[in-house]
Length: 410
Image 1 (tube, rainbow, N blue to C red):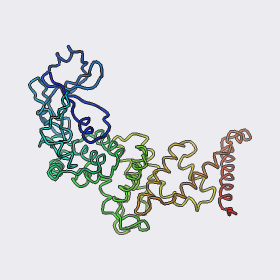
Image 2: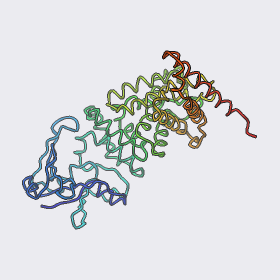
Image 3: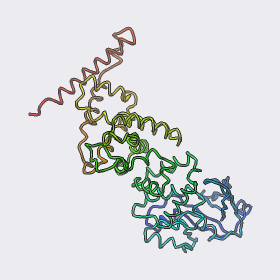
């Protein structure tokens, strides 16, 4: 029995990055031998065992054979005669196909170290084409390792996979899982740009793919198309370390611009409601979690309205806050403003622009929250009267805030 560390731990160690999860492959062993040595079996699709002390995963060396469409269409063969090189050959990229022996010796039959040095993402063998998830993983690695590029032969192979319909077999849950991981990487735009380049984005996320080539709103750098703008927005969100719901909202906030009639471009009249409709389709198709869905819908519908906040009178500001459900959904309101900040600053030369509208709306909410709704309710008999009295008091509080903000500083 020989045990080797494999995969991301070896790769990250060579890159000088912190190692999080460690995985091991075991060569020359049977399941019975693993159990006899105290390991605990946990694998469902292939033999995986947990170390009796460290609880780290140890998988028996295996080969895989394609039996059908998609990433689940495989049969697995694990036996003592499967060699380390055969196990490494089934992996996706050469940088992930390096093993490290217990004495520290590296086993690198596919020249992964050279590809790491040259910052190249290259597939191990033609078997790469048998698993369409690997296209998504390629995008995710580009978003994480921002100096890496895809080898030309790997890009050509991914395009062939798209043309052969392999990407059509991806299940929605797995697509969302990879998109979510990519959004949380250092520069998520690189994932989506690569998926667009190889044609996969047009299959798994056509609503987003349509944004490239569509001019941005005339007053905001019309020379930059909407797809480029959205990529700048999500990269800004990533740079600020924002949450997945905010990053997803930033990604889809302008989807409606992809269906703007050509005769009205570069204006995008009514794109907010078109964005809402398309987001509903996307989240239903990809099984997007509710926190991401809810924020995305609010941002898509109201991010344009925020730009008019400083021109609103007190009653209009209160109505806007109620539309945003800001009094009950405080965290979502804060995330709404963060997503709008990403939209405003995800433009050429505007990375440090002041966000007066967001701050203005935040102050309006703070003023309205000072109203003691419970105390007011004691003075009225019906829910209708209470609601109106609270609204009047909140409007007056916002009016006082506006008056104070207009007062000149001496």
